Structure formats: structure tokens, C-alpha cells
Length: 182
Ligand code: M7G
Image (tube, rainbow, N blue to C red; front, side):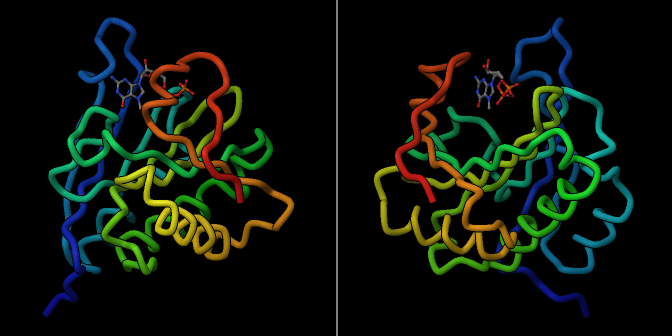
């Protein structure tokens, strides 16, 4: 018998095709709700570092689209880990897998607040974001951020910032201010 996860999760893939509006480039690839089905999926898809520039993977609770406008996300925000270019070959895949294991293993006290996570492959530097449901829930946001840093073994001097999606949306292009930094 397979080992059930507490939640059902969906994996999404985004490929940057400029002929389409952003949302239409977003595709739900697969979903799973057991440990075994997670590993069979993981073992048969490309590593994040093997995706083309401009592509994303997202892992979200089933039923939540990996976009700001989704009802589950629209009051929320994300913890953002900005990677240096040189981290793609040696750290990106480990960070992404560790974040997935935190999500599906419900590693946070406030796991109910977690919506999902995204990895963006970008020439200017890759990004990993952990999305939570309520940017005004400071206690939950901070607990999740602290644990995330711990689980990814990010050194204290590497700072991560939390930004509400509303601020990200309004600031599109320029730098978004962080509501919290850890
Ligand atoms: P990005 O892919 O998050 O980061 O956003 P990047 O700037 O490093 O590539 C790029 C652009 O994609 C944004 O400026 C938006 O036009 C669009 N976009 C990204 N996200 C996450 C969303 C979203 O959730 N909803 C909508 N409508 N557009 C988005």
C-alpha cells in the first residue's frame, strides 16, 4: 500500500512563448498524493537546472493555480530566494528538491498557510519562491521563512525577503520592497 501525503499536489510547467498571454503558457503536468507517486514523477522529469531559460516549475496544492490572481494566493505573498548564476549547477536542484520535500512533508507549523512553490530559470539569476496565503499573517510568514532557511541550510548572511503578490504585481519590472527579511 502506498504512503499517502496529507495533501494532493499538482506540478505545473511554464514555457515562455511570447505569442501567448502569460497564463496560457502555464500547464498542469501531473498531480500526486502519495510518496511513491511523487518519486515516480520526480524521477521521470527534467531537473529544474535542465529546463530552458525562461521556464518555471511550480508545485501547488491541487486546485490552486500558481498565479497571483488565484483566490488562494491573492492575499498572499512569497519568500524569495534569489540565486547567483553560479548556483544553478550545484545548488538549484538541491534547493528545489528540499523545498518540495518541505511542502509535501508538511514541514511547517503553519503548513496550512502554504500554497506552493515556484522555481524560475532566468538568465539574470534563477529564483525560488515559496508562496503563502496571507501576507498579513506575520507569525506564520516568519515561522515559515525561518524554517525554510534552516531546511535549505542557507547561511545566515544570505538574506531572503518576503513580498506580497500585490506589491510584486504593482512593481512589475522594478524592485519590489520586502515586508519581511530573514
Ligand atoms: P516572473 O516570471 O515571475 O519573473 O514574472 P521574471 O520577471 O524574472 O521573469 C514575469 C512576468 O510574468 C510578470 O511581469 C507578469 O507579466 C507575468 N506573471 C508572472 N506571474 C507569477 C504572474 C501571475 O501570477 N499572474 C499574472 N497575470 N502574470 C504573471
